[in-house]
Image (cartoon, rainbow, N blue to C red):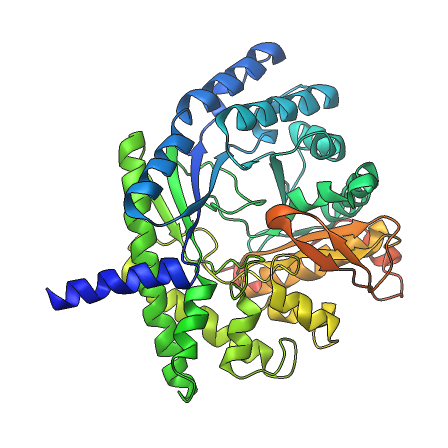
Length: 453
């Protein structure tokens, strides 16, 4: 009885004092049966299916949140990659479908809907190309629609023709929302090795291996981990790993409990727990501050990658003990604009773009929510994507790029994106050209480790 009471007290403390929350409950919905050669019929079916399946998602999550006293911050939807159902639709119709998704999300009261996506890591179909062509306008004219594009996998290599297009698309999306600091780019992720059950935005989509509908949960908790470490200031690094592991176990168990209850009440199967530590702009809710508590004077200094690797591994070990259904990305996010410690590291000249790229070798997901100077070229953006895809391809892990060229802004200026997207210092890029490399096109072949059968 005393042990149970102590655990209840600890959970209350984690919620009230240490920013424990369930970052997102995401419903995945299959839309493949909505495909139709008549676009208007397909458009109507998509809207009706989403609003039918997710009709009580927000209401149910809020009810469970109230009953159990643990905040569920975001309620979201992921859908079948839209390129798979576009068929012979035109670019204009693809944009109209994005607006339909946006309207469904607003009607349901969810934060984001992810899956305006295409998987082009080996080749580009007609539907894929239509979606790629529609992306800049679709993202600039909607509020809650998120997009992701797969350009590489360990098994197929890197599709450099797609990579080249994505640099141009990011640049155009930025220009179309120049009055809002290029905000359209904050809803676009370019992936290597994407997963089918990711509950986090902007990269979520409902993959072909998934069922008709599912509930996936992303639990966060950087603040809980940070406070746990502060209670052990003299621990050695092995003990630090143990503290993080045990804390991740508790966070994951609380998240899965709530996720399963939401799924049961919605009469939808429970899918996975994503163990990713996802920071916010709230005080002490920072991945960078965890690394600094481990012993770094400022994130980005020597030792940062080792500390991040320790933390990421410990989170996975603790979470895997708490749940048999771990999935999604399950690592540590290092988004600059959403993490006060990362912002401080850049402003203090401790954290550079090159160091951020190196950090992605040991954690998920990649170059995330980074503001770049407005004059960055499309070819440079493509080359950044290629570099990050190579890290994921060789290391057999998910990596991604979500960068925001901010029109009219120079290196060192601060830009505000608002809400969960936060603020970020504008970073410069290497001044030397990658144009010739990017313009070669073709495919970078898959590495030898792809031959694993």
